[in-house]
Amino acid sequence: MHASLIRRQLGGLVPPKIASPSILSAGQGSDLSPLVDFYSKLPKGSPSAPTSRGLKGRFFSGKNASASPIVFGVLALFGLGYTIDYQMHLKHHKNHAH
Image (cartoon, rainbow, N blue to C red; front, side):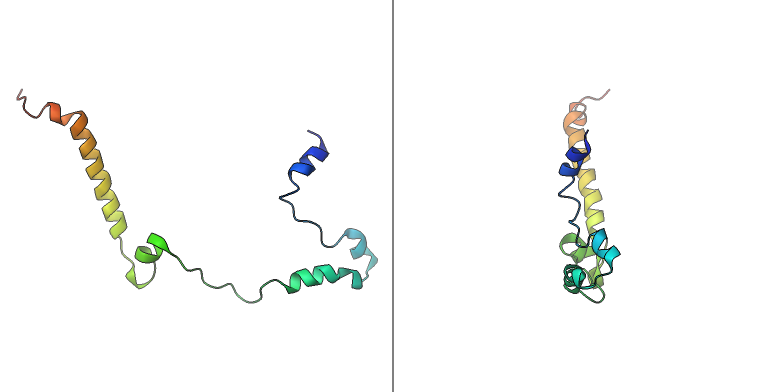
């Protein structure tokens, strides 16, 4: 592959340059205003705690933490497995005493 083809394909993944090396080596502070503007718009302070939703927020986090989804999941898998096993194999041997 050619370098230009790779550069074109990865163009969406790599962020654009805000400060070029020529500006940084020249030592001109006024040309760094785009860089200063970019960093001044970033949020400051510690990140807020993520709020968990769905099953994790309902059963595994906070004051309502329990293992009931795991227990019900195991019971559901057991019931499903037994039902499939019964339909495929056990019902054929139900009335046959060997």
